[in-house]
Image 1 (cartoon, helix red, strand yellow):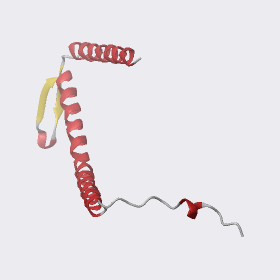
Image 2: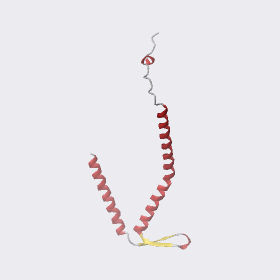
Image 3: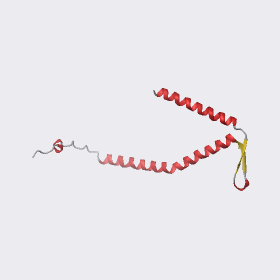
Image 4: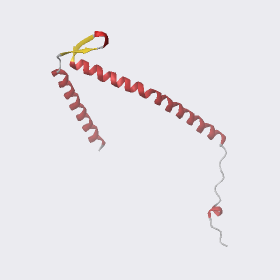
Length: 106
């Protein structure tokens, strides 16, 4: 079953790559991107789309970094707390008393 899913995943990836490649090949006309202060940049449409996509992905990763750092610090603190607790309780605990769980018959 997992082999079938891997093959299906690769087929979808190849089809997506082919579609994006054909889109890039068909859209090679130069476009003008205008910035502030009358500066402009001319490049093929496919390159502009690629640059915008890469910029968005990079900004998304940068936006996730603070949360990732906070989670890593929290995990490290929890691991330290767990190992400190394990060192403190190195003595084996006595087994529970089965008579304490039985209801008393009065």
